[in-house]
Each structure stands twice: as C-alpha cells, then as structure tokens.
Length: 540
Image (cartoon, rainbow, N blue to C red; front, side):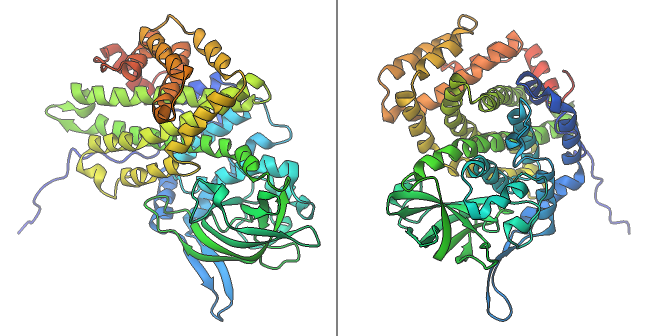
C-alpha cells in the first residue's frame, strides 16, 4: 500500500541568504544621514555574509551547545577554563575582523566611525547576541585603558587595537588580539555597587591583592577584567589580568557558570578572588566614576542589541507573511495583519532614527551639547528600546503562529534573549533614576532639549502636546514618575528625528501612533505600503 497521507504545501521557507543591510532602508538611510556613508559598501558586504544560511546556523549552534566550565584537569590541577563550541569562535572571529570591538578608538578613526560601528553591531545582533557581550565590554573598556593602562601592561595596547580574535591562554603581550571583561556585581548589592565587600590591599610593588567574590563575572575567558573592590580610599577600579606578567595564572577561581534564560552561548560566571593580583586604574575611591565612563557605552550597546533582535524578528515575520496563504490571499495582504506588520515597521523606523542620532552624538562627544544629548538619551533609549523588545518579538511569533513558537524557528531564541538587555548594565528603574539625575544635575540640559525640539515645533500636534506635558513634569519631577518621564522623553526624541527625516505622512503616523494617548487610528494605505517596502529594502 502507498502510505503517503498528505503533501506539504503553503509552508513558507525560512528566511536565509538575504542582505541584512540592503534589506533595511531605515538603517542605510540613517548610516548615510549621520555621517558614515563611507562605510556603506563594507556594511553591505557584512550584511550579505551575515545573512547567509551558514552564518545563521553558527548562531543556532553556539546557543544549542553552551559553554562548559572546566575547573580541573585530569590530574586535579585547577584549570578555571571555559570550553566553547567551534561556532562561538567563528562568530567571534567575524566580530573582531569587522572591528566591532574597537573601530571608534583607532588613532586615525574617521568621522562617523561610531555610527559605522553601531551599524555593524546591529547587523551582528541579528545573527547571534551572546558573542556581543565580550565585544561590548572590550569596546567600553578600551578608551579607559588607552588612558590609564598600568605600566606592566603597556604592551597590551597593540593587540587590544587589532582585528584578530585570539582565544589562546597566554599573556596579553603575546597574543594577537585581546578581550576585556567586567566584574562589578556582588550577591548583596546588585546595582548598588557601593555595598561591595571585596577588599583590595596595596602591596609594596604597587599592585593590590583582591579578596572577595563576584556574583556576575562576565566572560570569564577574557584576558583581563575590570573589577570593583574596596581599597583604603574607597571603592576603586582594578585591572585584573587572567595571566600575570610572570606567566602565572591569577588567583581568580571560577565557581560555576550561570544557567540563564537566554544568552546561552555566552559564559557568565561566579568567581572567588583568592588574593588575586590587580592594578589600580585612576585613583583610590574613583571606582564609580570609572564605571560611569564605561556605563554609557555598554548601555548604548544594550539598546543597539535589542534593536537588532527586533529587526530580525520583523524580517522573519515579514518573510513568512509574504509567502503564507490564508483565506485566498497572502497573509501580508490581509488587512488586519497588514496593519500589525506596518505598525511594527513604523516602531522600528523611529528606533533607528533615534539610535543613530545617538550614535552621532557619541561620535561628536567633544562638543558639550552633543555630549549632554548623549548623556540624557542613552539611558532613555536603553530603557524604552529594551523594554519594548519583549512584546515586539511576541507579536512576531504570532505572525508565524505555532511554527514561531517551536525551536526550529529563530524566534524562541530571540524571545529568550530579549530580557537580558533590560537587566544588564542597570535595569529599568536604574535607567530612569539616571535620566532624572541628568535632568537635575547636567548643566544646560533643559536648553539642549528646548533647542532640539524647537526645530520641529508646529509640525505635529501630538508632538507639541507631548512636549508641553513633559515640560510640566520637568518643572518638579518626582522619582515615582521616573518611568513615565523616561518613556516620554524617548518618544519625543524619536519623534523629533522622524519629523526631521521621514516623509511627512510617515512621521505624522509615527507621532499619532506613539504620542496620542487616546489611541491611534488606522494607518493609511499609502503609509502601510511605504513602510512595508522600506522594511524589505525595496525602496531607497
């Protein structure tokens, strides 16, 4: 007998072999607008390579085969090492070759290099997010180390600025490329690092001995970590290498790897510092100030990473909707689904505009106004973009239906990945408190906002009303209003960018959808068409 029960049809093929850069009009428009058009050709080549089935499979493999802690060798000697799947190393090679960890810090960095680097980061995030953790920390630590790397490690500067990935266990001076991790959090403190109990005692040679623990010691295989500890002069920041200058292993004991919801490819550990050797960065008591130098950079990367994941979720949903037939039409042509997908695309248009305006502000941070703008909108963007990612990806899952909920799809992994960026580098309330702190203490910040928003005043009534409402709250801001203020600030910042750069119908649709508290009306057919074409790269 012939046992075939059915023929498989009307099942869309998964999205692969697409150009992640050229298919995203909002992204390549923002790159050109904010000063990195010179990198467009290279970004297109990266987008082509990352969009291949082979690259996407590397992302799957790295998460299906998480890192393994190797505490001892067969003889019982301490190893304190981490073993990764080969896919992890291939992904890291690509990130380092594309200079995502140091592009903006080159001696001859081009104008717009921060913008170009942000675009490369967003493209890589769409393939695999765990590998971005060591890249982010290395990127944030590099400018600090360029200024204050301890004398015994001055020969680390060259490999720190290379485009090579070198996972071998060796002294930093002997390696072709370096990664830097961070160890800030302790069990009792979390974001309250002032409660840290790890002690640092100064030695006769100028180094310090660190005794204590770290509850989250990110990327333990890094060549060095920046660690907070209590010295005689207060909370201080220390450079703690994995291999000491004499070639011996430092006394950093890996206790376990965290079993996390997502971010499975990346190793996060708990450690005990057993008289570990460290070198002071800056002065004793300056630990928090040193963290703040890096915190803005890592927080910006959190927003970029969430944005990249959201963009991939929309791409997967759109590709499915263009193929799937329902009730006699392609799914994308069903009115209700078309409205859902258009609104998702519109949300990302505003995100892209704001994030790459923010990248330009970081690029021009020597200008006091640009620096103040970046200082304010970085925590606001981290809060709003990262918070918005979880429901956004859930909506993309619904487009695919049950298939999107199954592990064969990319979407479950993306969904599990989303919360980490809201938590890491300061959770939502910490971001809101930071925004309130900037508004209260940053000189001239109100003038910066007035100048920025005055340029688009009168173009949209929803924007104008939202700005008046925010001004009223800012006259006497209350801590309990921190989330409301932060969200409204982000929306107005993104709205201002849309009013400047998007077509008037699209900009007004964005302001109506995001800033009208009464709920938005239907998007016009023309706006829907424009958004869905731009989201697939079919128009410039």
